Image (cartoon, rainbow, N blue to C red; front, side):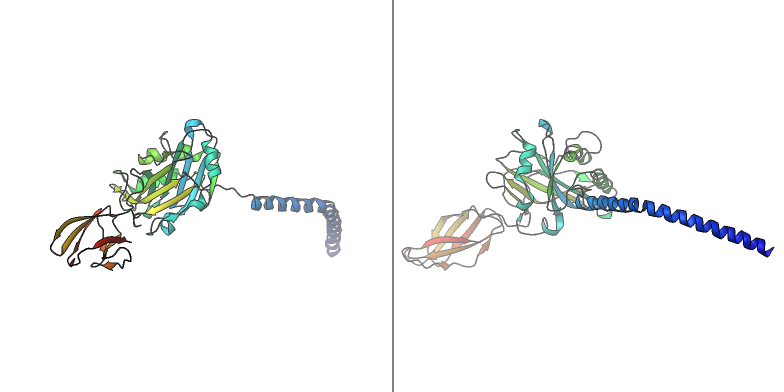
Length: 337
C-alpha cells in the first residue's frame, strides 16, 4: 500500500515536472508579448498624463466669465475661470486686475465677423453655504463703486441655489486663471438663453449676459445670494463691478464695492464773504475721498497753507469756511486724496 502511494506520488511528481516544463516553455514564448504589453501599457499611461483634458466640472465659488455667439451660430464658446470669488476678487478694497486671464484672440475667435456677442459672469455652490453669483449690466459707467448700477429684486432659497449649482456641473470650466475655447458650447446651452428647464437663466430668472463688441467698454455689476434659507428667499447682495475695456489694449478688472471711487476735478466757488469769514462751496466731490482747503496770498511764488483739516466727502458737494481771511487778497485751492 505504501509503494502504491509512492507510485502515485512519483507519477504525480513526473506530471508536475512535465507540466512545469510546458509552462516554462509557454512563459518563454510569451515573454516578448508580455514585454510588448508592458510597453503598450506604459505608452497608454503616458498619453493620459501628457494629454489631460482642459475641461472639468465647475469649482464651487469660482467665478466663470463666458462669451457666446449663439445668434451668429458661433462654433465655440469662450470660458474663463477668474478664480475663487472671495479670496482675491470681491473681498478687498482695491481694483483687481484680471487682464492676464483674458485672451483677445479667443474673444475674436468667438466673435468672428459678428458686430457683437454676449458676455457674463456666474458662479455657485451647494450645501450649507449654498450661493449663486451672477452679473447684470451696469448703467452709468464706472461711477461710485459702493453704488450698484443695476437692480436685482429676486430672491433665492437654498434648494434653488443647489439646483443652479447641480445644473452647472457639466459646464466646461477650465482651471483658475485660464480660459479655453469650448466646442461643446456649454455656456450657450447651460447659462442662457432660457431654453427650458436646467439653464442658469431659467433657474434664477436672470440673464447674466450683456452685449459687447470688439471696441466697447462693458460694465457689469456682480451680485450674490449666500447661505439661503430652506424656506423663503434671501435677496441678492451687490459686490462690485467688472469692467472689460476693449477700446485699446484689452483690460479686464473687478472693482469691489469697498474701493474708493476715482477722483474727478473738483470745482471751487465762493458763496459769501462776511467780514473776515469766507464761505466756499466745493462741488463735483467724490464720496470716500478727502478734500483739504488751502490758501495763499501770492500766486507768483505761492506757499499754500491748510485751512482747518481735510474733510471726508459723503456726497458730491462740500462746504468750507475760512474764518480768518484778514489779508487784502487770498487765493484758494483744494487738494484731494
